Length: 309
Image 1 (cartoon, rainbow, N blue to C red):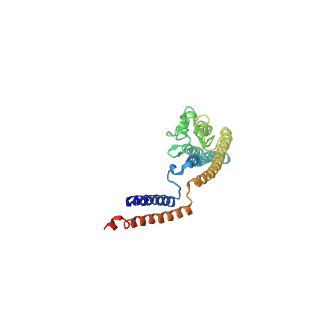
Image 2: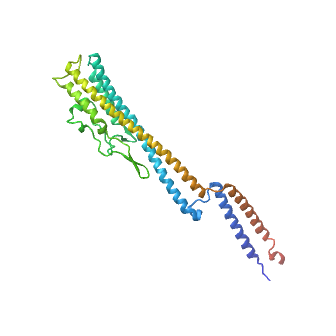
Image 3: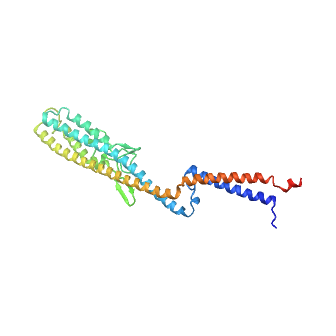
């Protein structure tokens, strides 16, 4: 004969209630978070796979973030390089105008303006640092402000403060790209042309370049015209290379976006809850809790103490 005690019945019913409540809580979490668990411990044997997929996703996301930063830098460089082209082109037009009109009255003023355009472009700032300063991003790459300062400098090289370290970006696994330029590389040839013209103008034997140019002055300016053409072509080539880098970064970004989506889909197969099953489990758990609670309530009426009274 088996004995049935009141305390044993209560304990059994209470354990059933607690188990049902835990199942209800688990199902509620799955429904609210749409995930099978809220930590790695809840994924059991698949936790290692989930960890590896998340690590891979983080690496790809890091490359995406780098790509966005590099893309913004390349866009800023494109704007600055086009200003350099405009400055050199403006200087060329000013000299061509002198040769076509036989009047150099405003030549030096025009060249001063175009030189300011070039120096302003080379001193462009981006995200708090100078764009063409190399690793030296806190100091203006170009130290001269006008043609007088340029003419007074002992050499063109002395007018640049940038270092020799060009920016390199790691944009993918085993892929690093040189994505920046140095002010000295971009401006040395251009500055030398401006310096030579300023020196020629200030020389008492050859200048000033005002009024109707002499035959010697016309020959000199014609030579500078060819030099400016070559400098402008070089600046255009650099701008084209910068544009090619922009396109390459864009393509790499699209590839990383597709890769990240694939990794997230793979991870979701292990982490995302089956919502239909989760809702069904929640409903069943709620019924089980109600049933367990009713059992406990009914046990109050089957105590032997009620019969002894």
